[in-house]
Amino acid sequence: MRKLTFLTVWSVLTIFHFSYAALPLTTDDTGIVDTGKYELELSFDNNKIDNSVKSSIVSISLKHGLTEKMDLGISFPYQIEPFHKKQLGNVSITLKFLLLRDIFALSINNDLGSSSYFLNGIFFYELPRVRVHFNFGYINDVQTSNGNVNYCCGIEYPILKIDLVGELLGNKEGIQDYLFGLRYRIIEMYFICLSYGNSFKNDNEKISLGLHLEF
Picture 1: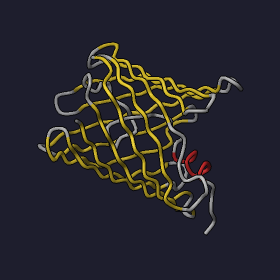
Picture 2 (picture 1 turned 90 degrees about the horizontal axis):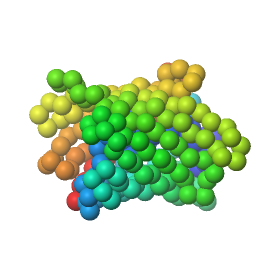
Picture 3 (picture 1 turned 180 degrees about the vertical axis):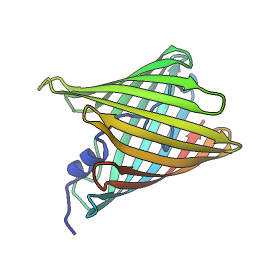
Picture 4 (picture 1 turned 90 degrees about the vertical axis):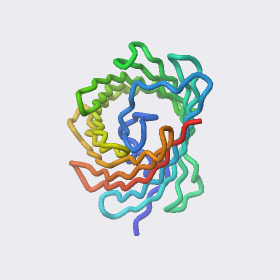
């Protein structure tokens, strides 16, 4: 089996640089963690890239509510396979600011040690039975001045203790990827999730399991 380095695998899987969405969505929401509270998310991704390279990655994300309108998040991936001497990925830091309650938030993200930053506008609209989230983001490298625009749209359809979810992700070249899945809410602040994602352009398949806790 052809093998890729960790950085190559992770760059393929994170073409869309949105961070800290409620699992299993990549699309972020306007929600802010309550002041003084924590939110922990664990995910396991089983990936198949171009129908030949397989990888398994565990991701950990922890957020803390700083104020009623701001939270701080930290996350990092750990590659289980294929084996590489650098199993641990870059630590990522995100600050999110709620500017208009239940309408608009803004986040800024940086991988520690990186010269690039990611600015993401987060919009929310609620229909009678469906919640809609839209992200419009810009990633830029301050050293090279190279930038790229990303966008994605996620929907949630709640049915009792289950949320059916789906999303589309794109960039300046058009819509690239899709995902659909579900969440099962064990209790109000705890849920598990399962999702399937793939690309419209090639066969970059991803199956994910996740756990969400708030405390």
